Amino acid sequence: MLKRYRNHLLKMIQEKGIDPRLFKAEDLGSTKAIAPFMITLKESLLMFMIENPENDFHCFRWRFTEFNPRFTVTERIPTGWVQPDGLYNAFKYWLEDHVKPYLYEQVEPDLWERIALQEPLLTGSALISEDTEYFTDDEKFRLRMSIETFRLSVVNTFQPSDDQLKVIDGHLKYLKDAVDRLNRIDWRGVAIMTLIQISIVLTLDTEKGRLLLSLFEQVFSGVLKLIQ
Image (cartoon, helix red, strand yellow):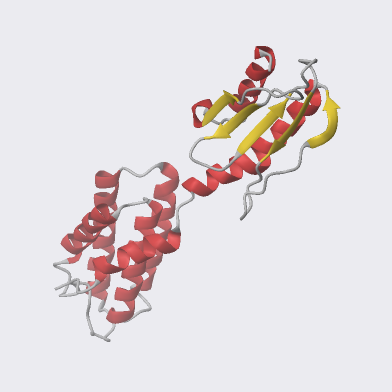
């Protein structure tokens, strides 16, 4: 396959915002009928194989792996030979509809898994209370002040982005509002979920999740035995 066509495919990868270093390109040798050139997404089953007829550098056909549960390989497309524009359109389709969705899946966080990782951090922690009484006005004030202090600790420790902080503030506002309407044990349940949600927003691993819990306990440890 001529370098000009190979290079154009590389530029197409870059134009799609994908790191070309994620791909491997190689010649597969030649047969009497074809001279295959294959582009593979590294550490995956996705590939795009291109063929030239033995007597024409400027005609192509191809086949590729689809991103589906079986990673199906298509039949040769088309049945004959086509000009470069046809190849480029097919390669663009493969990048947009198969490569990019595959890459997104690799980096998409598993929120259920993150919740499961955080659950052991709360087992036997000092957050547990069986107190079903409601908060006094003085307790409500002290809790709200503690929530603001906790927010500052989170910002200073984890340095969230503006978007992350916006979500975190929403969770903390909900926790603050819950002081007026929930008893101690129900508020504790909301506090636990708030910690899990903040951990997910910050994409914390188990060790940093423990740090988040420790910050929470330190801030609230003096608030009317809510955390003992």
